[in-house]
Length: 265
Ligand code: HEC
Ligand code: HEC
Ligand code: HEC
Image (cartoon, rainbow, N blue to C red; front, side, top):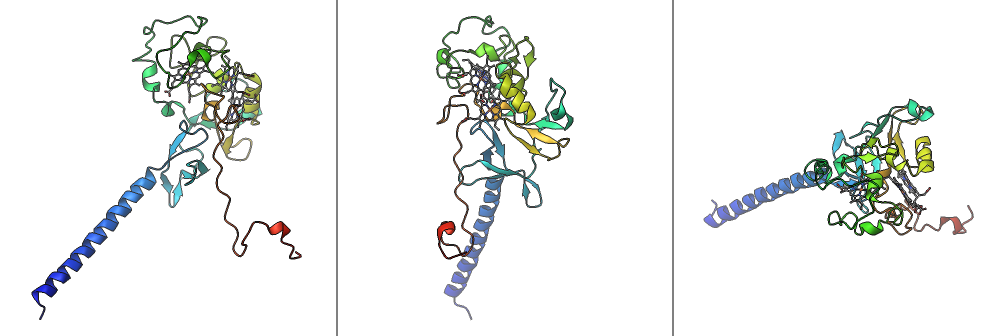
């Protein structure tokens, strides 16, 4: 025979077990949701973010570093990419399949910059060679437009952005260039780097090894901030990344001084 008190404690124990299981369930569900929502960056922090997600059994599109939030490796180098578009010059590098990640998905203002704000009428278009003026907008992107960090004051917004079609860049011949192909605009002033990039000496590519294989090319703006190429400690075009911590020592080794431990092997 159980006393009322015993029945009550049993019930409480049972209930608290249920509550505990329920809590665990919520916890694991929410941590799964968090794991899925983990956002890390590829090359330029704050401007090349990628959301970690499952793309197969125990395979993620990217693996994010827990210490630096940088991407450590790609489970699928082609995830979220699209064809690169024409290469102006036919050469060896054009024979493989080339893809890029679109930049427009990374830019908060892109959806409005050709319509609501700069529809070609407002503000009244200025001549591309007009002298630079103090800006009232976009001071978050370019704190001091009269002293643009890129080019140390030598260049100006409309050397890159088209004066009328604000959601396009402009090349030397006056052709509009898509935001997803910044190389065609950057290349008009940085011809040597552009050539090196096309040849695969500057920048980065991931994907298939064979020269005719499919590769993802990283475009200029995935690494360089176009408005402040002086950012970063070296002030030379690339904000230095926080290094990953050193790898763990192999089992049985208590310090990294193995080359000078003098035990005779
Ligand atoms: C050297 C070329 C260059 C110059 C000069 C330049 N820009 Fe840009 N701008 C770019 C590129 C490239 C992008 C796209 C960046 C990306 O893909 O991350 C951009 C993007 C932008 C955007 C959209 C940003 C967003 O996050 O949505 C605005 C607004 C902008 N520029 C304003 C300006 C203003 C104002 C100036 C002048 C004070 C200026 N830019 C000068 C190259 C330039
Ligand atoms: C209108 C000409 C022009 C365009 C277009 C242009 N740049 Fe520049 N860029 C310059 C000038 C001028 C400098 C300063 C060079 C110097 O000080 O030696 C510079 C400097 C740089 C630097 C720093 C180099 C260093 O050693 O300090 C980087 C990186 C850079 N640009 C990248 C880009 C990228 C990426 C684009 C396209 C988004 C671009 N540039 C478009 C003119 C241009
Ligand atoms: C994968 C990243 C990456 C990509 C993509 C990339 N760069 Fe660079 N770039 C760098 C790094 C890193 C440096 C060296 C910065 C330093 O010395 O601190 C550099 C240096 C530069 C410099 C200055 C040094 C020099 O050789 O004159 C310029 C200009 C430049 N890049 C332009 C470009 C242009 C234009 C593109 C696209 C055609 C591009 N970069 C694509 C990472 C990249």
